[in-house]
Amino acid sequence: MSYDAHFRVWRGDAAGGELADYTVAVHDGEVVLDVIHRLQATEATDLAVRWNCKAGKCGSCSAEINGRPRLMCMTRMSSLPSGETVTVTPMRAFPVVRDLVTDVSFNYAKAREVPAFVPPPGLAPGEYRMKQEDVGRSQEFRKCIECFLCQDTCHVVRDHEENKAAFAGPRFLMRVAELDMHPLDAAAETGLDRKRAAQEEHGLGYCNITKCCTEVCPEHIKITDNALIPLKERAVDRKYDPLVWLGNKIRRRGA
Image 1 (cartoon, rainbow, N blue to C red):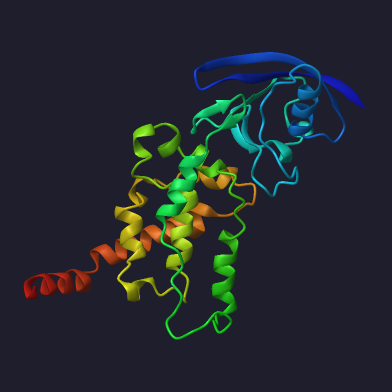
Image 2 (cartoon, one colour):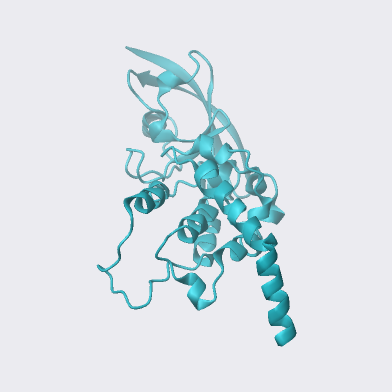
């Protein structure tokens, strides 16, 4: 069965733009990306849209559908309110390049700010040994497809451009949390305190755990509960531990 749907799609570039109205045919089983491709093939041949796998694994086709950050390839038309206009706009947290394509370079800059895994001294790759429980904890975070929907929906990034310099966002705080809980990460032995860095360099304190990042994650990663809240707890424990405070005082006096 086919039917005609009313779409409103944002058209424009960095200088500005507006929503354009289209009527597009929809067939059973289609997702929003299918309809956008049909729109490109018929009425808007110059419509810019980023996509790659169409299987929910590359994270390329992120956009906002009826105001909610989603992957276009994973949003079935049948899941949207029947008979209502479908509005598709670019991710609001990032600068528009053209139409539905945004400049997400902010995220790659933040990724480079997170120090990489530090291998344990005296062990070569292949000699690492971990408990299955520890493997499972990290494996959840490795499911991330870099769609940046969590970054887009986070109000600290989305609504406050001035915060971007000091705040890494949920995706990269999750990366810090993953490394901090990794039993083989030897960062501390090199003088790198990941908990302190999360608080002072990556803006962990800006996060107020509203769980909006978890709600939009297409991989269903429990970003808030399993990464951000535990990282906050460890950072606070470290910062306000009386023994750590006393040790820092003694070291400063000795200097």
